[in-house]
Amino acid sequence: METSHKKQKILAALHRQFLDRLPGQVEQIAADWEALCSGVATADTLGRLHHLVHRLHGTSGTYGLHEISELTRDFDAYLHDLVTSGRAPTPEEQTRFATLIEALAERAGAVQDAPPPEMPSAPAEKKPDFARPFRVLLAEDASLFRRHVAVVLEGAGLVVDEAENGHIALAKARKQPPDLVVLDVMMPGLSGLDVLRHMREDEALQAVPVIVMTAHSTVEDVKEALRLGADDFLTKPVDPGQLLQRIEALLAGTAREEPPPHAITILLVEDSAIIRKLFGHVLQEAGYMVEEAENGAAALESMARSRPDLVLMDVMMPVMDGLETLRRMRQDETLRDIPVVILTAKGTLGDVREAMGLDIADYIVKPIRPEAFLERMQANIRRLALAHS
Image (cartoon, rainbow, N blue to C red; front, side, top):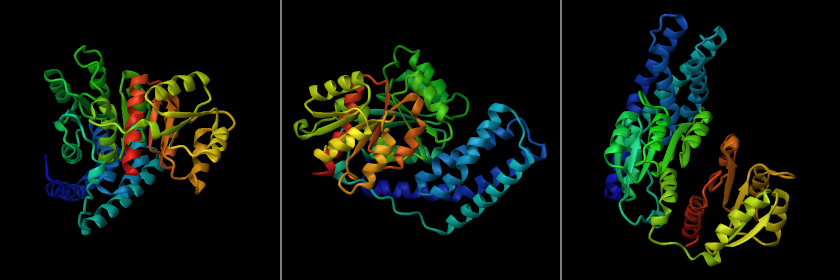
């Protein structure tokens, strides 16, 4: 396991390499866009351009360059549309994105003068305590980002096996099934979705937990990944610490310690009486106290009478939906710091992005197996217990 000091040095070096490569990447983006607009592009130009922009969008935020990630967000979505539709850029689009690329080049030049920021390490008491050094297969084609994530996971005691594309990832998984797989969706050759599809058709890999990583602009990929059997997903830019929490949640049954559940009260807000009964029963059987509310308005009334330790809340509800309830909680000084776990259906994944801006602790996608649901909730409760210790 890397020492904390050594880990910081490695992360700082990776950050510096990312900055050093940034101007050249932006120059290639500008050249490919000019070729595409002038009609002299080769068959591979659009694919390469999309891949470069998608990578910047997905990885820049991990290195603290959130402005670059935001600058490339719409461009990434637009190029995805060009790839799938086969159409050519309009004159208005040519002007719009040429201006965006100029802004991107200016920003890329500006950050070169700044030293890499110090990478803060996670507090020791919040570090996951896994029962054994689980093996995680990390499939991601961006080499610096892949190594950055691997260093963080290795620092938590996990064994990380890296793969730079889908073909290598699938071959490694078949040779030695890992305990968990982290898959980037967009990779050259065999995509993350293709890898997931092959895994779920392989008897030896069907039960291996899979977390997919994708950009905000490709929500449809998330839906497809969940349909194929992904256990969880993260949208880029990915915080490696958040990824570690998701891994902890999926491997929660093997963590060494669980906090005593008897002191935890959970407010379950869900308009479906059947789902309330199911989830409520699972939580009560695990020893937690459960209060129920059938919509957001009833939840606010319940919290005014008795403050819960954690709120588990559906998004789509009558009278007052989950997002409006969450907004009101964050505006209320007595409720704003209560952790909230959002329940969302596969068809409402777009709401997750808005919920993240309202400081949610986690989100759980329905439908979900009761065992997996309890593991996710226990992971959140462990974090709650550590925060108050």
